[in-house]
Length: 81
Image 1 (cartoon, rainbow, N blue to C red):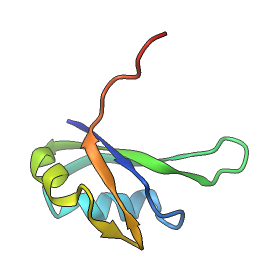
Image 2 (image 1 turned 120 degrees about the vertical axis):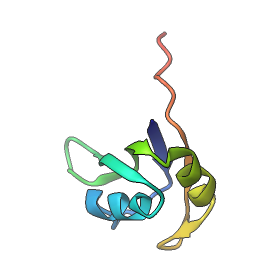
Image 3 (image 1 turned 90 degrees about the vertical axis):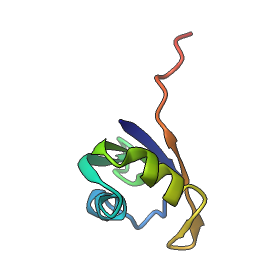
Image 4 (image 1 turned 60 degrees about the horizontal axis):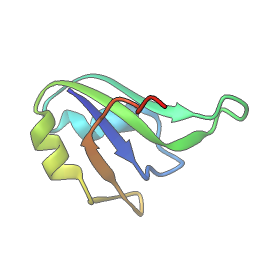
């Protein structure tokens, strides 16, 4: 399952994100989205999990990490216009 993670701290990296979710199941990938021009975090990312995704969403949504309240939910495909 692909999970959207929003309101991330600017200081977090892909490894931090993976470690956060690894406590709840098997993480297959964790990627924080960065700005192409500045290479800085855009404050959100995606985590793919082979198991434990529902538990991770339940456990981590609205928890505070590095002073920011996370938004964690199942990733939905981008709406086409």
